[in-house]
Structures are given as structure tokens and as C-alpha cells.
Image (cartoon, rainbow, N blue to C red; front, top):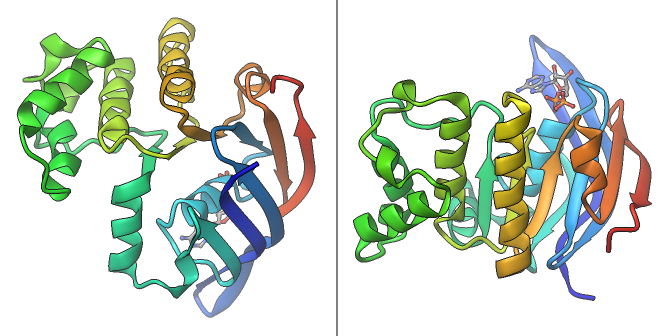
Length: 229
Ligand code: ADP
């Protein structure tokens, strides 16, 4: 089976106020192309940090992150951003939409960055896919949490990512909206073969994936197949 993400001896130490805090220690796993994966663990165990390192949002202190065959440790921040633009979708728990741009403009940003053509029509298509074609001119503050998360999904889908990372994608949503968002994410896996890596405390969501990786105190403590493969 093909591997899209290879994590070896990964460690992260933050330095603040003259003190070093190791939040990830010797993490090892491979993620298969097209698979669905959950990362679970108590609050503060290092999940968000791990997701950020896997997606190339931050750099590791030790070890290797290899994404789509590219060793991110060898790259400058700019080059990492290029790899992200090309292969990665990322969904943040608090959506992270740009507040001064409309929903449509938020989805257009990555298309513009990639120098694509017909970006307005493409962005409208993406908003349509998440059921928000009629909300394009709304600013994030004029949208509900669930709508903002769907705009952020449309933005994350815009580069047809090979791998989608999501940090607590349903963390701030009610049950009904959460179901819609989960369906959109898993549709992307089924229809486009996009690999999913989801950080979640929602065990029902985790159980929908092929594999559950458990982190505690910065260490990988379990790596279970869920039988959904
Ligand atoms: P989780 O997502 O599992 O809740 P995080 O990855 O957010 O865990 O955080 C793991 C630990 O790293 C926490 O103790 C947190 O306070 C610390 N941490 C996260 N980001 C930073 C940072 N930029 N500087 C210093 N410490 C950090």
C-alpha cells in the first residue's frame, strides 16, 4: 500500500521564558494513501502540535515528516507553504476565516495564490458543494458556526487536496451541523480518494475511520485498526 505521510522519531520542544517544554516525543507512524485516520487523546497531549507538524504548518525539533515523498525538514518555510498549497487541505477548530473578506472571497484566496483561472466561478462551485451558494456575499460574522465551518471546508477543498487535516472539525458544532460537516469530509475521501487525518475528541467520529492513533503526554500510546477498512 502506498504511504502519503511518513512520521519517524518525531519530536517537538517549545522554548519559552528560558524553559524547554517537550510536547511530542519519538512519534512514529505511516499513513496510507486514501485511508481515514483519527488522532485522539486528552487535552494538552500534543494533538494539535502533531497535526501542525504533519501538515507542514510548523517545523519539527527532531525526526522526519515526509509528505507525499517530500521531506519537509529540508524545506524553508516558503517551500513548505508551496507543498501545502499543492497537496494539503487544513480545517481549523475555530475556522480561521479572514473576517474582512466575504465567504466567496475566503474561498477564492487559495485559488488566487495558486494562480488559477476562473476563480470566482470555481469558488462558487465549491460553496455550492457545501450548500452555501446563496451565502457567498456574507462576511464570516454574518454566518453561523456551522456555516463558517462549511466555508472553511470549501476553502480546504479548493486545491483538491491529496490529504486533508482537520483539527476538531466538529468541536464547535451542534449535532445536526456536525453530521453535515462529517458527511462532506467523508464524501471527499470516497469521491476523490483524499486521505483524512482528523484530530477529534468525538469517539463516534473516530470510530468511522480506518484507524485510531492515541496520544498521551506527547507519546503515541496506541495505534488501532477500527475494522472499518
Ligand atoms: P492538544 O491539541 O492535544 O490539546 P496541543 O498540541 O495544543 O495539545 O498542546 C500540547 C502542549 O504544548 C500543551 O501543554 C501546550 O500548552 C503546549 N504548547 C502548544 N503550543 C505551544 C507554543 N507555541 N509554545 C509553547 N507551548 C505550546
